[in-house]
Length: 187
Image (cartoon, rainbow, N blue to C red; front, side):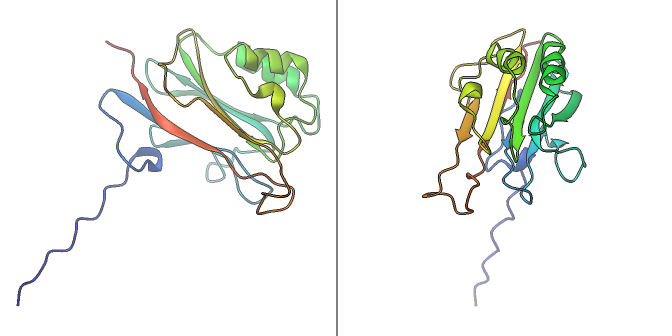
């Protein structure tokens, strides 16, 4: 009788990537929320910056700011733009991000109902091509940089809009997810 060894258990990768990031890169994963029971999350270098488990995800636009040089989180907040009155604070938060920062953004439930022009301008100035297309309950994820350029070919933005003919849950678009590996700053 010949015994076969069991295949090795695959090693878990940072931020639940299917494959490991190359050396000298940061792993990230952004997942928009869907409805009131599927929560948005932002993971960076295997640290959950925004999510249900850390208790800081909320309706609206969730934003994490990471120092690009150190790879450490600087701030993480959500801005409820469904109720209104939070666009100005969000625009100020974005504009106040230090140079050499990564900004990671996802929606939970709704990020557009009362999204004002100042917030759209702040996000658009960072390269978003979809911020002005958001509609009620759109799922959206966005990775950007302040003070430097991200490499070409890096997935930066994804959006999904409500489509009752396609949505598996009526009135709620599918979650969107972007993940990848951001090269670290050369030392």
